[in-house]
Image 1 (cartoon, rainbow, N blue to C red):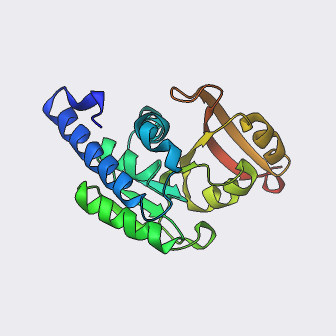
Image 2: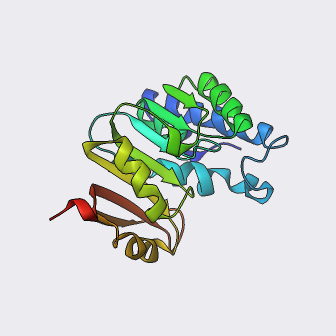
Length: 203
Protein backbone atom coordinates (compact mmCIF):
# COMPACT_ATOMS: atom_id res chain seq x y z
CA UNK A 1 0.00 0.00 0.00
CA UNK A 2 1.92 3.07 -1.28
CA UNK A 3 0.92 6.59 -0.49
CA UNK A 4 0.68 8.99 -3.45
CA UNK A 5 2.92 11.53 -1.70
CA UNK A 6 5.95 9.30 -2.32
CA UNK A 7 7.04 11.44 -5.26
CA UNK A 8 8.58 14.88 -4.84
CA UNK A 9 11.67 16.56 -3.50
CA UNK A 10 14.27 14.66 -1.49
CA UNK A 11 12.95 15.83 1.91
CA UNK A 12 9.38 15.07 0.88
CA UNK A 13 10.43 11.65 -0.42
CA UNK A 14 12.20 10.89 2.87
CA UNK A 15 9.13 11.87 4.88
CA UNK A 16 6.93 9.75 2.60
CA UNK A 17 9.29 6.80 3.04
CA UNK A 18 9.17 7.14 6.82
CA UNK A 19 5.38 7.40 6.79
CA UNK A 20 5.24 4.26 4.65
CA UNK A 21 7.46 2.49 7.17
CA UNK A 22 5.13 3.64 9.93
CA UNK A 23 2.01 2.46 8.07
CA UNK A 24 3.52 -0.96 7.37
CA UNK A 25 4.58 -1.40 10.98
CA UNK A 26 1.19 -0.24 12.25
CA UNK A 27 -0.70 -2.78 10.16
CA UNK A 28 1.70 -5.54 11.24
CA UNK A 29 1.26 -4.76 14.95
CA UNK A 30 -2.48 -4.34 14.51
CA UNK A 31 -2.78 -8.08 13.96
CA UNK A 32 -1.70 -8.60 17.58
CA UNK A 33 -2.93 -5.56 19.51
CA UNK A 34 -5.83 -3.22 18.91
CA UNK A 35 -4.24 -0.07 17.45
CA UNK A 36 -6.92 0.79 14.90
CA UNK A 37 -10.22 -0.85 13.98
CA UNK A 38 -9.62 -3.87 11.75
CA UNK A 39 -11.98 -2.42 9.16
CA UNK A 40 -9.83 0.73 8.97
CA UNK A 41 -6.78 -1.12 7.61
CA UNK A 42 -7.52 -0.33 3.92
CA UNK A 43 -8.12 3.33 4.90
CA UNK A 44 -5.14 3.80 7.19
CA UNK A 45 -3.76 6.70 5.13
CA UNK A 46 -6.94 8.70 4.68
CA UNK A 47 -8.58 8.00 8.03
CA UNK A 48 -5.53 8.13 10.27
CA UNK A 49 -2.23 9.33 8.74
CA UNK A 50 -3.53 12.12 6.50
CA UNK A 51 -6.05 13.07 9.20
CA UNK A 52 -3.16 13.61 11.62
CA UNK A 53 -0.81 15.28 9.13
CA UNK A 54 -3.35 17.99 8.28
CA UNK A 55 -2.55 19.61 11.64
CA UNK A 56 1.00 20.48 10.53
CA UNK A 57 0.15 23.87 8.91
CA UNK A 58 -1.72 24.90 12.09
CA UNK A 59 1.23 24.32 14.43
CA UNK A 60 2.93 27.32 16.03
CA UNK A 61 6.08 28.33 14.11
CA UNK A 62 8.41 26.68 16.64
CA UNK A 63 8.41 24.50 19.73
CA UNK A 64 7.71 20.90 20.63
CA UNK A 65 4.49 18.91 20.70
CA UNK A 66 2.80 17.16 23.60
CA UNK A 67 0.32 14.57 22.35
CA UNK A 68 -2.34 13.32 24.75
CA UNK A 69 -3.55 9.74 24.49
CA UNK A 70 -1.25 8.98 21.56
CA UNK A 71 -2.55 5.44 21.03
CA UNK A 72 -1.18 4.33 17.67
CA UNK A 73 0.64 7.64 17.14
CA UNK A 74 -2.20 9.86 15.98
CA UNK A 75 -1.58 12.68 15.66
CA UNK A 76 1.67 13.15 17.62
CA UNK A 77 3.99 10.61 16.03
CA UNK A 78 2.78 11.41 12.53
CA UNK A 79 3.34 15.14 13.13
CA UNK A 80 6.86 14.47 14.39
CA UNK A 81 7.66 12.47 11.25
CA UNK A 82 6.15 15.12 8.97
CA UNK A 83 7.68 18.19 10.63
CA UNK A 84 10.85 16.86 12.24
CA UNK A 85 9.80 18.40 15.56
CA UNK A 86 10.23 16.82 18.96
CA UNK A 87 7.07 15.27 20.38
CA UNK A 88 6.27 13.90 23.82
CA UNK A 89 3.75 11.10 23.40
CA UNK A 90 1.55 10.47 26.45
CA UNK A 91 -0.02 7.01 26.49
CA UNK A 92 -1.09 4.91 29.50
CA UNK A 93 -1.39 1.57 27.68
CA UNK A 94 1.94 -0.27 27.94
CA UNK A 95 1.42 -2.31 24.75
CA UNK A 96 0.71 0.82 22.74
CA UNK A 97 3.79 2.43 24.29
CA UNK A 98 5.86 -0.52 23.04
CA UNK A 99 4.50 0.04 19.54
CA UNK A 100 5.16 3.79 19.69
CA UNK A 101 8.78 3.27 20.74
CA UNK A 102 9.34 0.67 18.00
CA UNK A 103 7.74 2.88 15.36
CA UNK A 104 9.68 5.96 16.48
CA UNK A 105 12.98 4.11 16.13
CA UNK A 106 12.04 2.68 12.73
CA UNK A 107 10.99 6.11 11.44
CA UNK A 108 13.86 8.07 13.06
CA UNK A 109 11.29 10.28 14.77
CA UNK A 110 12.35 12.67 17.53
CA UNK A 111 9.90 11.52 20.20
CA UNK A 112 9.81 10.45 23.82
CA UNK A 113 7.09 8.05 24.92
CA UNK A 114 5.70 8.53 28.43
CA UNK A 115 3.80 5.55 29.86
CA UNK A 116 1.56 7.58 32.11
CA UNK A 117 -1.98 8.90 32.26
CA UNK A 118 -2.29 12.38 30.78
CA UNK A 119 -3.56 13.77 34.08
CA UNK A 120 -0.31 12.71 35.77
CA UNK A 121 2.15 13.82 33.06
CA UNK A 122 4.86 16.21 34.23
CA UNK A 123 6.62 18.00 31.37
CA UNK A 124 8.17 21.41 30.62
CA UNK A 125 5.71 23.98 29.20
CA UNK A 126 4.87 23.09 25.60
CA UNK A 127 4.17 25.20 22.53
CA UNK A 128 1.33 22.93 21.47
CA UNK A 129 -0.81 20.16 22.91
CA UNK A 130 -2.55 17.83 20.48
CA UNK A 131 -5.27 15.24 20.93
CA UNK A 132 -7.42 13.05 18.71
CA UNK A 133 -10.41 11.19 20.06
CA UNK A 134 -9.01 11.39 23.57
CA UNK A 135 -11.62 13.23 25.65
CA UNK A 136 -14.26 15.97 25.40
CA UNK A 137 -12.99 19.56 25.32
CA UNK A 138 -14.17 20.17 28.89
CA UNK A 139 -11.95 17.31 30.14
CA UNK A 140 -9.02 18.24 27.89
CA UNK A 141 -8.69 21.88 28.89
CA UNK A 142 -7.45 21.33 32.48
CA UNK A 143 -4.68 19.08 31.15
CA UNK A 144 -3.79 21.41 28.29
CA UNK A 145 -3.75 24.48 30.54
CA UNK A 146 -1.30 22.75 32.89
CA UNK A 147 1.04 21.56 30.12
CA UNK A 148 1.02 24.56 27.78
CA UNK A 149 3.34 27.56 27.81
CA UNK A 150 1.50 30.90 28.36
CA UNK A 151 1.28 31.50 24.59
CA UNK A 152 0.73 27.83 23.70
CA UNK A 153 -2.15 26.38 21.72
CA UNK A 154 -4.19 23.20 21.79
CA UNK A 155 -4.94 21.50 18.46
CA UNK A 156 -7.84 19.09 18.79
CA UNK A 157 -9.28 16.84 16.10
CA UNK A 158 -13.01 16.70 16.76
CA UNK A 159 -16.11 15.19 15.18
CA UNK A 160 -19.58 16.62 14.77
CA UNK A 161 -19.89 17.34 18.50
CA UNK A 162 -17.20 20.06 18.46
CA UNK A 163 -19.60 22.97 19.05
CA UNK A 164 -21.48 21.15 21.80
CA UNK A 165 -18.19 20.36 23.52
CA UNK A 166 -17.07 24.00 23.34
CA UNK A 167 -20.39 25.18 24.76
CA UNK A 168 -20.11 22.72 27.64
CA UNK A 169 -16.58 23.93 28.42
CA UNK A 170 -17.29 27.67 28.35
CA UNK A 171 -18.98 27.63 31.74
CA UNK A 172 -15.64 26.84 33.37
CA UNK A 173 -13.09 28.15 30.87
CA UNK A 174 -12.26 31.29 28.93
CA UNK A 175 -10.52 30.64 25.63
CA UNK A 176 -10.00 31.79 22.07
CA UNK A 177 -11.29 29.04 19.78
CA UNK A 178 -10.71 28.86 16.03
CA UNK A 179 -12.40 26.27 13.84
CA UNK A 180 -11.06 24.66 10.68
CA UNK A 181 -12.93 22.09 8.59
CA UNK A 182 -11.25 18.70 8.41
CA UNK A 183 -9.85 17.87 4.98
CA UNK A 184 -10.24 14.14 5.54
CA UNK A 185 -13.54 13.67 7.38
CA UNK A 186 -16.75 15.44 6.28
CA UNK A 187 -18.42 17.14 9.21
CA UNK A 188 -15.34 16.92 11.42
CA UNK A 189 -13.60 20.01 12.82
CA UNK A 190 -10.12 20.99 13.95
CA UNK A 191 -10.17 23.23 17.01
CA UNK A 192 -7.22 25.55 17.62
CA UNK A 193 -7.63 26.83 21.17
CA UNK A 194 -5.44 29.46 22.81
CA UNK A 195 -5.57 31.87 25.76
CA UNK A 196 -6.95 29.10 27.98
CA UNK A 197 -7.88 30.36 31.43
CA UNK A 198 -10.12 29.16 34.22
CA UNK A 199 -13.28 31.27 34.25
CA UNK A 200 -12.96 31.91 37.98
CA UNK A 201 -9.50 33.40 37.46
CA UNK A 202 -10.77 36.11 35.13
CA UNK A 203 -12.23 39.27 36.64
